[in-house]
Amino acid sequence: YELSLILPLLPKGAKILEVGAGIGLQAKALAERGYEVTAIDLPAKLASVWPVQEYDGMHIPFADQSFEVVFSSNVLEHIPHVVAFQNELLRVLKPNGLALHILPSANWRFWTNLAYYPHLLRRLVQKFFIKPESEAPNEEIILAGKRSALQTLLPPRHGEIGNFMSEMYWFSRGRWQSLFEQAGWQVEAYQPSRLFYTGYILFGLKLGLAARRRLSCFMGSACQVFGLRKQGS
Image (tube, rainbow, N blue to C red; front, side, top):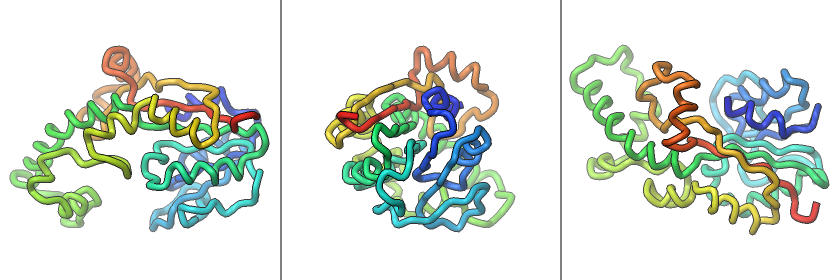
């Protein structure tokens, strides 16, 4: 659904760099629509559905002006040097190139904070009253083990800056726009996703896209899309 939001903004057949591509699901989907897609991400021991080139997270391993579009989906909030990293994105874009970023919103952070407690209760019930199907630890349990009992009472932060409260500012439209403009971008397009969800799967498929779109009308959108060009392009 969120990928469909950027498709009207993409030049036909554009050469795209996806940053933080994960296992390559979105890169594959874009390639199937006729785009030339290169995907990069940090090293990870995951099976990919599309070729994903590993890089160091600091320097994009391509020459200047290599791409017409740079794309990321819920990635920039996980980059601690996000301001400096904009220089790399600007560097690899062709003149008048386009950057498209799907980013979490302040609404998502607010509702994720509230959803944490039903999620925590469910995890406690599963731990003490329901025998797990597998003894293999998952990532969520490993991360929870690194938090103290007191910390467990508070929602964890999602990104690399601040905490669960201050992220309502860090993920706001105004903060993202200010960051982009200071880094040398001009905001050409902006759109809320008009889809509601939180960081925890409380209802899953019980709430379909139609219901989540209706909920977004009064609970806000979970994500937002920014379309950027170099200042002066």
